Length: 290
Ligand SMILES: [Zn+2]
Ligand SMILES: [Zn+2]
Image (cartoon, rainbow, N blue to C red; front, side):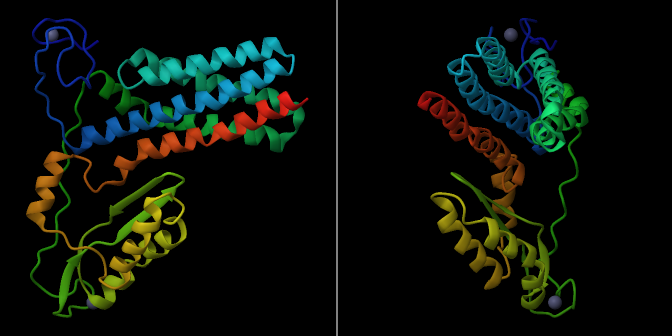
């Protein structure tokens, strides 16, 4: 348990200041820490928003005259909600959440009588989350306990002076491709790596980002409609975006996740979890219709 330097009462690693004595905790907060916090927030948002459709399914079971299953699923949903909401702050809720996902894997194995394909569908989600939580267990639990990872060397930006990195043509600019990905109400944009390229090679280098944005950029309301054509224009016509390095450093110091795709994980996870709500509602409605 992490303790305050001033009043030695327990504090969470993420609290910017001690909740009890209001002492400011001076700790390094760089991109590495921000990425770990983004993953914790992602897990929190996903588990917490997924508990809502689960609660809906519990209501459906209750209306279907299965009070025992309804009570068990309802309890599971409440535990999911509470443990995930508290997850970025307390290591204990991490353990509870991990146990709940493991329980989800075991429960989905109970559907094996329905057939292998159905079992795979039920088990896929809890298995994926359980594997991810096992894989990231050490660094994320260390973060909850207050450790700060060593700051990595920032990626070196290519110098503005010189020819194209690929063909050496003298007319080259330092550009990065723009990625745009949407999901329902969330649209995300980030920039890839900066390289010094001529127009032709910038276009080639931006091709994956262009194709990806053209395919999955549109499907978000409202920003997908605006940002996707902008990203396509920037990638195809301008070969990517240029950024003033001084301005970039200022933005990173203001927001350690500036321009990184990890900053979009938490809202994406929430959208993904909430996707289950219409299905939960459908279940309840179909039961009410009987
Ligand atoms: Zn204190
Ligand atoms: Zn070139």
